[in-house]
Every structure is written in C-alpha cells, then in structure tokens.
Length: 70
Image 1 (cartoon, one colour):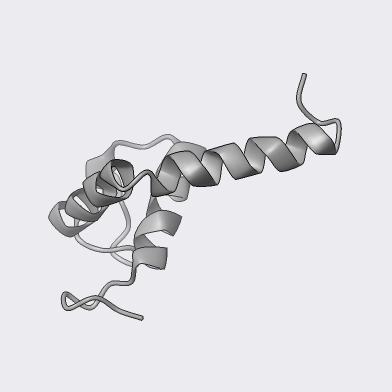
Image 2 (image 1 turned 180 degrees about the vertical axis):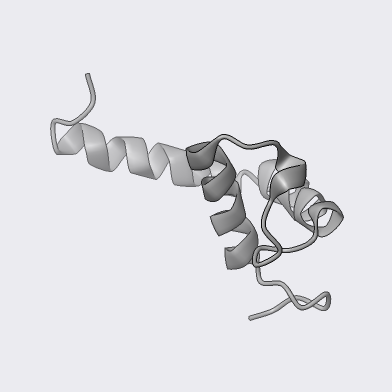
C-alpha cells in the first residue's frame, strides 16, 4: 500500500536492495523507487524499526540452513 507520499515501503526496501547490489551513490537512486529525500527518510525509518536487520537475519538464517554460509 502506498504511503501518503505515493511510495510504498516495499518500493523503498527494493531501493535499498538495488543500492546495496548495484553500488551507486544513494543520490543516484532511480526515480522508480522514490525521490532521494523521500527514500532517505524511509530508509532511516527501516533502520530505526529494525526491519532491515530482521530481514538480514532471516536471509542469513535461511542461507545457513541451506549450507550456503561459509
């Protein structure tokens, strides 16, 4: 569901993944994710609410159980 600014939390999360995977500067985020200021504000919210940390822990746990973590 889009937020009041028209961008969903999922779009922001996908933007975080895009930046981490592609390696650009945060300010080079494509418009399909959101404007840089909107993205940054949502990114801080994801960090403060531990959403990113919890997602990371779940991913590492699944990879570990599959024997894919060295």
